[in-house]
Image 1 (cartoon, helix red, strand yellow):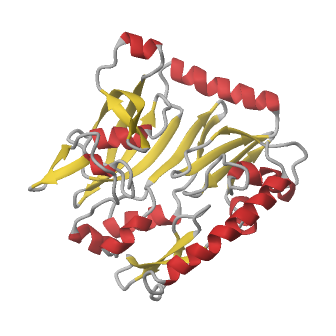
Image 2 (cartoon, helix red, strand yellow):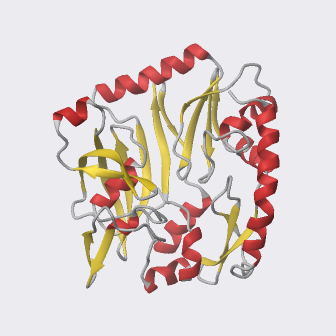
Image 3 (tube, rainbow, N blue to C red):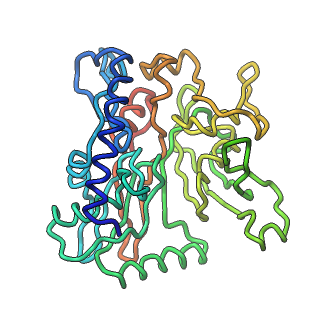
Length: 340
């Protein structure tokens, strides 16, 4: 567990990054217009502000300013959604990694200070958490035995064929079926100077036994559709880095704000198709109508955060929920998708 020294180092590292980030932001879009701004992506990369125009949808996006450890700590302190016994749950913003290198701002580096702010005597341990680019529930424990018990509970739930984690995702594209399962092998593959998670449709027994490839499964259900976009419920039975993003591309419906895997889905005359795995990654491309509904210009798309949120975890005592972050809710309203 990182100590308070890590948090201090994170502050120094963040200060070095901050000046460049603020300078870059000053050359970006103009100030938000009217209404109440909401915080978009928060964490190592700071915060983006959405203006609200007359129709109640997103206006201009602009760089607000880089959040430091103290501000992020206050944000986490206010994001507590459950506290009982040794168990604590937070609603993590997108962009904040759970673990980080020494000097990086991460949840792990802030846990000692968060423990003091919350008046907890024992150290906090991460039981379960979404990836850096996701938002949603982070399950913490101040008891070693409780941590191990909960981790074993999640493992056993998957072995029994249960789905203890439920995500929400906004997608660009609508699945052909209202509900279904995505099954495929996944593995890491090197493409030039970058490592990518790629699907392996029919993995061999040897590659699975060597753990070169992992068999993965995600159950999905369409909760609402409008104008070529959808709100999906995702329940992964397995855990692999970027699993949900890759599975959504196999449905030809990449997540909104996925600037890494969305390039795998191309379109000809409006019909989506899967491009080769060697296709270079690029900022997600959205049509003019969707850009207009989101109140974004093509130049601002790079800053659109990923719209995948860990909304529910099933614990031994029952389900635990966390509401979507402001940027996610705002997008639902702009698109006219259901909020519940």
